[in-house]
Length: 282
Image 1 (cartoon, rainbow, N blue to C red):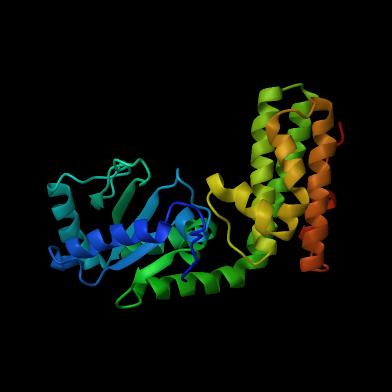
Image 2: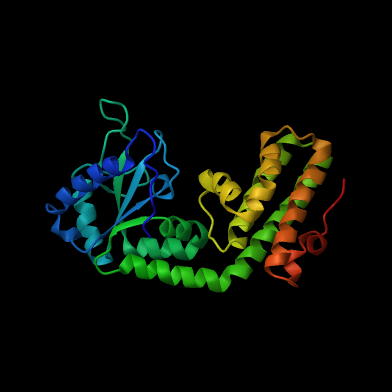
């Protein structure tokens, strides 16, 4: 999917991105073992949320039988990302004008992408759906993402019900923590509760969910439920809600989620989370 990048700011993202992709293409000629690899740009630069503090994230996805050779070469060149994925090249965080971000082209075997889509479907599918696929010679990445999207659609109600259950249980535990005057526990549970609610918000709009660092920003501005509960979620996260009000505030958020879910799946018992899981009043 090609996502339009906002270039209205004084920082020309397309020129910056083009610079790095040109470097990557030049390096390609020196690494024939990567000839069948796909180049995927992802992250805030492809969702339109990039700013002057954003990195440019590029994945180089190659067939498994080419990965070991490519990895050995990258390791031999001394390029190794912090998470132990080798990188084809890594730019400095800024140039002399202080405007160019860090850019690393990480090398991934195709099986790694497939495994990530299997084990973390919501986040990995969101990332790949919102990515900018520069090249995919054999459409291997495209086929994986299409299959994952089909699986997501098939399991959507089940996934949403599971996340709604997480939210309902955490609302119960949050109420208990508040009753015990456990401010630290209540704070942790409030964050966990909101995470579940915002993931539900994404799925109620037929979308997978972004990584946690983007979850509130994305869901609160781009989903129906997220827009409705954005202010309450921020209030809960702020830590400014008195302990005695946490139960009522979080229960109201959960009730809103149930209303939106019931409209999306009329008659689904799981959508009536407060009744199904028994909200505890303090």
